[in-house]
Structures are given as C-alpha cells and as structure tokens.
Image (cartoon, rainbow, N blue to C red; front, side):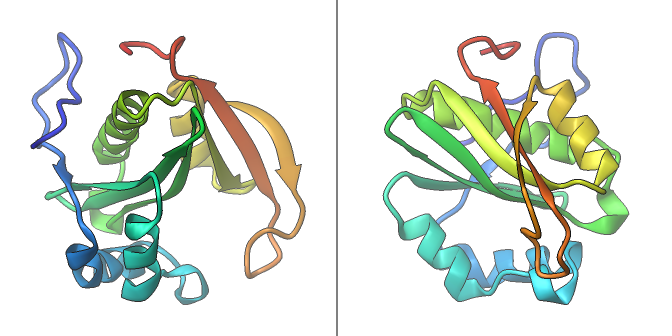
Length: 160
C-alpha cells in the first residue's frame, strides 16, 4: 500500500512506500548518508524501531525516509532523513505529511518530535507543517546540541 501525500494543486510527488524491519539495512545506508556518523542509526536500531508496538516507517524512493511510532493517541517522529543531494525538493515535506496521515490512521491526536536548535531548515519544515515548540531538551544530541521539542495537533493539521 502506498500513502498519498499530495494535496490538491500540489505538484506530483513520488508515492511513499511503507517499510518493514526487513528493509532496515537499506534504510540504515540512507540514514547514514543524511546524518553525521555519531547520529546515524544502524540497521539493528531501525529494525527494532519498526518492530516496536506502534512503529511505522515510510520511504520516498527518491532518497528519503521517516520512522515514527503511535501509541496511546500520541505519535512521535523518531527520525527523518533525506539524502543531502535531494534536500529542498519536497521530499521531507512529503514524508512528514505521510507520517502525519499514518499516525492519524493509528488514532493519534498529536505528534511530537525533537530537532536540533541549530537545524534551521528542519525547524522551518516543521513549523510550516503546524508544529510548535513545547519544550527544550538540553544536550540532547551526541555533540551536546540542545533539541527543541515540537508538537502538532493532528486533528487541526492542514489536510488531515
């Protein structure tokens, strides 16, 4: 099953493909291309996230992936990765929209995520999708960078 992500009037996008734990090795290579070595996820970690209760993932075949989970009416973006050469082309936006649809389909009312305070492009993406800052995690990342905690109401999110 593919997940539709284009809103009326949007340019056509690649269909998002749900992923399974068996896809973890491929996804780990994609993740490694998008993050510094200390933040790249192994195939084992990805498989465990997909096997966990409420875990889900989507792949954009053009070069992006998102992993999330939905439990007890709340969802979380665990990671969103887009290959560096494919950034700024709508892949991240499509993956995020697809994950929001997926989470809503799993009865989540809200979605949370953490993002590095210095990752302005990602913060802009999340704000454009309706996410608002609700907290701060000090020294959250391996390099000591703080993370914003952001939240969006899925029932109020545009297009859902």
